[in-house]
Image (cartoon, rainbow, N blue to C red):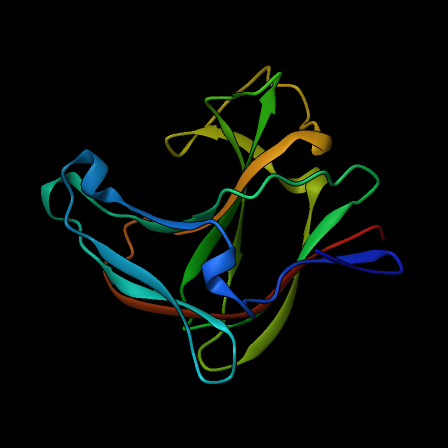
Length: 172
């Protein structure tokens, strides 16, 4: 992470090999969706693949397992080139080294072939488990983020492509 005043760069995809990205698709539940994350010639991360609803599937994701301490920050920022699909950004926190079973999630829309800078305020993330909102979950402990992820789901069958220039955290 690179500090820049009241922002930090969480990832800019300059070296994918040194980052702990992992693809997780609906195959964990019997589905057949496929996805990957690659760096293109512009140095951006490209998350792409095909979502299938067969075999009770319907999601593809890529997650980063680098821990983050975002105490004092208020939002994520993403610069991305979308395809018109709806995506989710998620993060998981832990307690004394044990990851919580839920994640905090926010959904965002993309526009086809248009670069956007999207603000994702921490106060707008909701706790979910397997896509269902949960009640009585405490606000996230931003000092103990153990993973973050980008996901496509919501019965959006077919090919998808999301190009990501960077992910930052901001204090304002």
